[in-house]
Image (cartoon, rainbow, N blue to C red; front, side):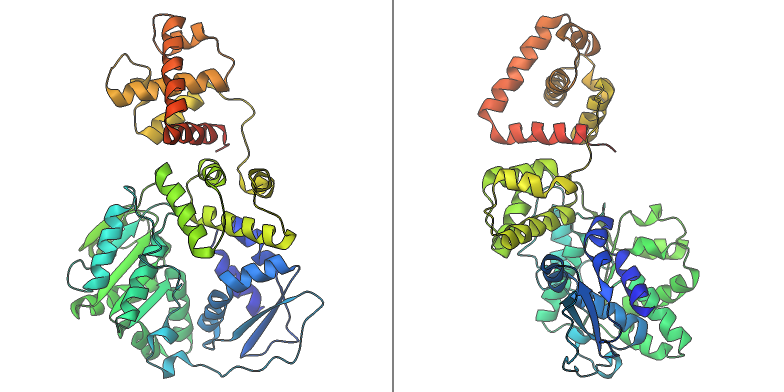
Length: 440
């Protein structure tokens, strides 16, 4: 069924958790649907409102990719489907040169709503520069990093800024590009496809890693890239890894992706996560106190998309249940979104996590080196080991290469003093503890 294949495309673009919790609950109402309008039913008002807010435009676009017609998407409550919807005007994307018809950008993804920290400062600066001077300063731009850290936000911000300044922008995931290509190839309308992707000022392509092993699509993308680059048009690409690490990608494409500037987005530091949570609440009119914001930042991991989704979900539940958002309420609502905890913690678990998060070798943490960052990592390791395991102070002294239990006691005292006087340090310890406890 067409509707099933459309939702399957959407599944590739969002987290598995969001798909299972919301999109999977939809049922397609074929009776009430027609080419210009697609109707889905939701089991409750929470899921109905969530999908209306976040995914109607996306689903509409995916139908357009599949059929060439962009339908109106209606989400109704189960057993209350209305059949007399007003038909919307049929839109053929190839009959209009308006950028807003050719591309769907999230209007909330702007430079102003993007929270900048040390983990994303470079990528943010590059993105802002190309938005102001497309095709002039850096071209192409390749932004990479793990899922959910803000790559899509940045390229939408470029698109929104550029459209507001009269530029023609095309945004697509590589999946959408591939489906457009396949549809037009099958229908012998490749001139339409090339008109769409080559007659623009800025081409924004998300999830470039999915070009892997798609030989025919790579061939077409290669020529699209060359055409735009030769004309001085801006190209911005994102991926979860740098070009040279994308297996199944032709060398000539890797080479072109590396022509311009490559910027990575790293794991956000705790202060940035807290700032992102507060910014999200400010933009959406959600009232969370510092205690709740800190709890979410230290408990939810590093995927910003999942954190923002959890906040929206929390607010939706509170609104539906007419409940004030307290810390206890937050913990209850977010139970399903907090990853399962380990039953038993080992000293190796603790060292491994601290080493990864603080960028210090495990051997250095257990060494006698006195560099400030190594000493702090060692103290944190001792503190967490004492609190998360049953090891005695004497056995910890032996493990960390210290003289005796008095050295462990001294380090514990220093960490406790910092926890009492430095709120950010206290939260960092809590965040590290949660990451140690989570099953990988």
